[in-house]
Amino acid sequence: MMKPKDLAIKANILRKENKYEEALEYYKQSWDILKDAYTGAGLLHCLRKLENFEYAVSFAKSLIDLFPTIDWVKNEVAWTLVSGPFKQVNSFTEALIVAKKIDKITFNPIILKKIAFKLLKLADNHEKLQNAIKWLKKVNIEDLSKDFIKGTKWSDKSRWKYNYYKALLKIGQYEEVISNIDECINEFPQIKEFFLNLKAKSFKESERYEVSAKIYEELMRYKKDWWIYKDYADLLLKMNVKDNALKMFYQAAILNKSMKIMVNIYHRIGNLCVELGKDKEALYHFILSKLIREKEGWTVPEDIESSIKKLSGSFPDISNLSSINQIFSHCQEFWEAEGNINTKIQKMKESKKKTFMGVLNLGRQNRPFCFINTKKESIICDKSILPSNVKDNDEVKCEAIPSYDKKKQKESWKAIKVEKI
Image (cartoon, rainbow, N blue to C red):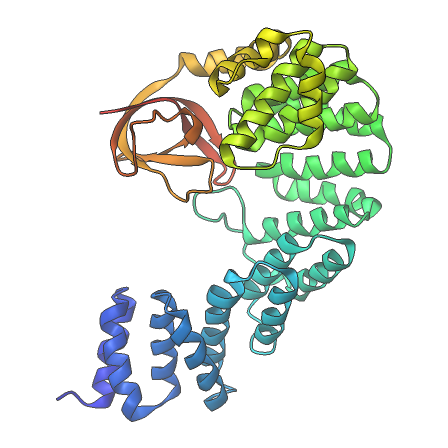
């Protein structure tokens, strides 16, 4: 029979090898005898990694009561609360309750950063945003790394600054954003488009539209992301330049083929087309928005229904169409007629398309996208283009075009056609 200390040593070796289930058994045996901080922290670490939070949270509470001043115990307890209860809550109030418990335990900047980012995400009004900003300020930014997060062009420090100024923008602190954002643009040139966008939005919200427009024009010279065109369209609407706003919405639609993400944009395009007297285009976009919502089980706004009813009399053949793909194709014709800049980009991308073989990973049911895992990389794919005969883990063949992964900040591939092998 192994001695208690030998059990703890063996458990520690297994834990460092990521063999958490095996390590947990040794830690339990050692803890039953020793009940020391070192063994307790190791046991809790394994429970956290195995996501056994029901037991982990209970054990964390007893562990911090036994060893309230031991740093590695406090750190492990804090990580357990962040990874379990805090991650699982979906309301600002509940998240704040857990956050305050964690704050009493540790000043770990990475943990505090995670708390602040989650609170920002859940904050849905001015007061909650101000509260979340206070949590951001708890983090000493000098403690955050400037090194890129693996597979991205972001660092912990750049993410903090971006979220901070984005929050200030939301609560109307436009001048503070404008005064400080150039420093961020110079400090983080790899992701300057995100900070430039905050700058443009700050000028827009403070009604300095011409300055904002120049920034968007600069952005579009070197970056062709759909959200830039969408935000520029919003600005042009403020400036009452509706024809050009529609062109920008169309270009955004060309660049982003995800119907779930774009469903509200299609609705807005419909409304804008009505204002411009483009009733046929409006009807196609209202019907597309309606069909997507019905397919996903979402509510169809009353104004979409009434607009379709009003316009259908002039175009009875269109109103009888019920195929999303057919309606989508008609809408694409309008986009490409106006969005000539991005049509050229798309055609250039398609000229570089490649064929890949891989395994389909559908992922979460509520996500509009999935992945095709090849031997070398994962290719993103909109679920709306999948054939009806494929299911999770099927081997598939796909044609893909160059794409840009905004999350990882690197060049990637996007599937445009999929078939089962």
